[in-house]
Image (cartoon, rainbow, N blue to C red; front, side, top):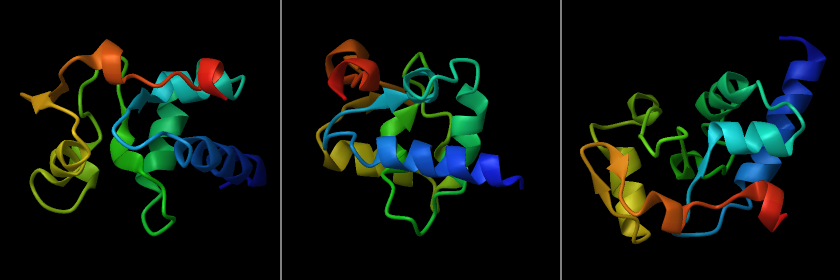
Length: 109
């Protein structure tokens, strides 16, 4: 990978580490906060590469609140279990009350 890609990933991790317990954000919201609004997919790649980096990747979902990254977690429903352990309601792979638990980095940071 190019060095600038790694730097972008590190910036993504810095934002993701600030997502509060019991809240979620989206790939696009992180990308927008970092000034790279069209880079939601790269944020997803960063989350996929965050294993072992103490990043709460389970708190990052798609713009509709779907657990699109769940297949990157060990076990069948680990992403959902982690969210539910924080009080986030999930039904059919979708965050319930999405607008209530959504954390917007552009407003919060």
